[in-house]
Length: 366
Image (cartoon, one colour):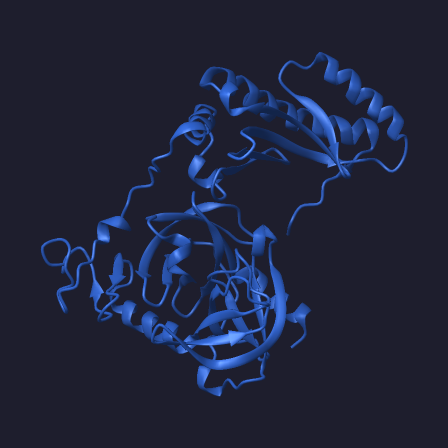
């Protein structure tokens, strides 16, 4: 199956996942009506932000976690028709077979990489993993490893740091076993015991912290946390400002110290860099016109003279309006004014620049 065919088949069923701590990938299995990902992608959160190619961001409930096999199941929203992705038979896999990984490495949506199975049964920590030279990077975690029949034969789980394309995927038979074990309790929050694989929930856990089957300590409260994230410092202030502006911060979060807000057709990215102590709030409006760029530059420079909190800039081919300031300067009241200025001016200027100067609409990820 060609790479283009893989993308066509999988694009609508591969999910972007984000928490305040991380980003990753998941995939929807219609036969089970659930989203599959890695435990380390959703760890410690009762709900995560999910997004597909067709649908916008929304919050989804984590239903099942398993730290031993690094698996997580997430409740699928009522999105309507989604593609039917099939689990393949791991036993039919052979060393040297071609495979593809699909996911969102480094935030690059719906990226695919092709490689071969270096070893189908590499044993690590007592479990078999599919070792592949397929490029798997941060953000790919939880995504599908797919054979040339278009079947999912593994869950991309980890890489060896410093290794040259050494990626490892959990074989599909482990995933199928977990899915079948969970189905009778579908809809209930479950943590599978990392010692004996017993399905532990709030009703059967002993003394609120021990597996009823083997007695090992399990604290399911660490996963059944609320959606309130205990932020401090600049990140806390930024989220307070966004909440004041009626932004759903749970949906806006895209990993650690990063937020993204959609205002009209403009995408606004807010970042705090703890290394250089800068806070940036940038609205990407549109792209440079093909002609009369001088007239546009003159207009932008004149508008910059009028602005109090924001400035126009050009990043590559993108026209951006935004603000930048040190962390020591951020305060809730002034932050509201700055962010609000960016939000309000983004939609206003985007339309004006396109209509008056023939600027090009900005390409958006599909």
